[in-house]
Length: 597
Image (cartoon, rainbow, N blue to C red; front, side, top):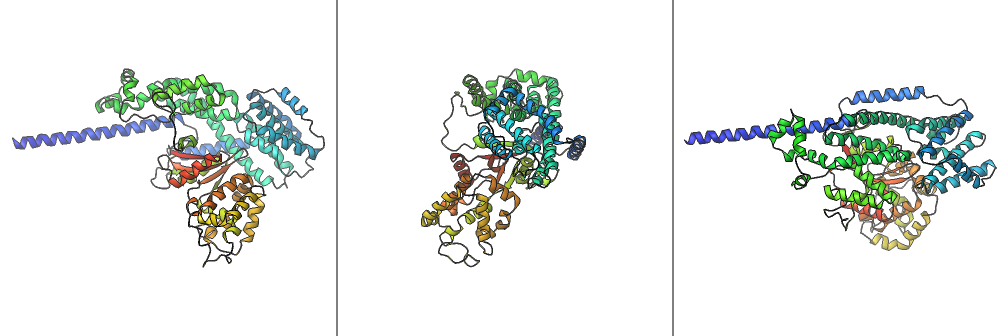
C-alpha cells in the first residue's frame, strides 16, 4: 500500500512538471506571437528585429542609391528658385496660411533695398517671427522670410555671405516627404554657387543626411500605407491596437511638419481609445484563462475572442497583476488637447484614463498631487533593433553593427538630424576647470602631477565659500562673453600644465574640447545655460560633478540635455538631482528610454 501511494505521488509530480512545461511552452509561443505582431506593424520601417536585418539594410541602401541617382539638381539658380516656390506654397497651405497675406505682411516690414542691409534685416525678422513659431502664422512668416533670404543670397553670388541662415531654417522645417525635393534643390544650388565658402563643407554633410532622411521618410510612408491596409484586415482588438501604434507614430511625426494632418491623427487616436478595454482584456489573457483554455485557443482564435467579450472589464482591473502598457494614442491626444486648451475634451480623456488606470489620473478621476520630481514628465521612448546578445552590446545600429545603449541612441538621434555630443562627468568637470581656472588655482603654483588640485576642492561647500566673490564674478562674465573665444583662450592658457580635472581620465579633455563637435556645441549653447551648469558644479564639486546627463543634442531649433537609460534601468540619485534641477531652471532636459524590439 505504501508503494502504491509513493507511486501515485510520483505520477502527481510528473504530471505537475508536464503541466508546467506545457505552460512555459505556451508562454514562449505567446511571446513569439506578440513579437510577430510587432514585426508586422513595423515591417519595411527602420524599427525591425534581427530577422532579415541584412536584407532590410541592403534594400534601404538600394533605395537611397536610387533616390540619389534619380535626383537632378537645378540647371541654374533661377530654375532652383522657380521650382521651389511651389514647395513654399505647399508649406503655407499645410499650415493653413495664405501666400497673398504673407507677402502683404512682408511688404509692411519696409525692408531696405541695399543687399547687405537687407540680409541683416531678414535675419533679424526671421528670428523675431521664429521665436513665436507656436503660432502657425508666425512660423509661416519666418519660413517665408527664410526663403527670401535664400533668394537674396543665390541672386547675389558675388558677396561672401558669412552664413546660410535662411537655408538652415528651411533645413529644420522642410523635413517631410513633400518638401525634400525642393529643399535639396536649394542646398545643391548653394553648394555649387559658393564652393569656397567655409559653410560648404558642413552643407555637403547635411546634403548627405537629408538624402538619408528623405529615403527613410519614403520607407515610412510606404509602411504607413501598408498599415492602413493591415488595419482593415485586422480582426482582434489587440491586432488593431498594434497596427494603430504604427499609424500614429507616422502621423505624429508628420504633424510636426504638416499641421494639416492633425484631424487624421486625432481620428486614429480616438479609434485606438475605443479599443482600450478590449485590448487590455487580451493583454491580460494569460491571467484570465487556464492553461488548458489557452492551449485550446491556439487552434481556435475565434473562441478566445468570444470568451473575452463575455468577461467584464471590471474583472480585469481587479487582477493582482493588472498593468496598463504605454498608450501612445492617449499621450498624443492629451498633449494636443492641452496645447489647444480643449478643457471639455481633456476632462473626457482623463475620465478614460481614470477608468483604465492610466495617465496621471487616480481611480476617482482626480489628478494626483506630485510631491517629488516626476521622471515621466520628461521621459520619451525610442525603439531600436535588438542584437540578440546579452550584456553591453545588446542593440544594433542603423548599419547593423553591435552597439551599446549609448551608441545606439547616438546613431538613432543622428539619423533624426540631431548633432550629438557625449557630455558626462569628465567633460563637464573639464569645462568647470577651464571656466574657473584662475579661481581654482588662486594662490597656488602651476598645477602639476605632485599638486594638481587645491586641498579644499573636494571638501563639500568649502571650495565655493572660500572663493564666492571670484566665482560669482566669473559667472557674470561668461553670461555675456563670446563663449567660443573664452574657452579657446582658456585652452591656450592652460597648455603645458597637468591636472586630473582635465587630463586624468581615459580621454584627454583638452583634446576633446578642441574637437569639431565640442566647438560646435560651445558655439550653439546659450551662455546663460552654460554658466548655470558650471556654477552648480562650482558650488560643491565633490557632490555635483557626477550625475550630469550623458549627452547634449541640438539642431537649429533647440538644444537638450539627455540622460539615456534602458527600459528598466534605474535613474541614480545623483542623476535625479541634476534632472530635477534642470527642470527647475528651465533647461531643456529629457530621459530617453531605449527599447529593443
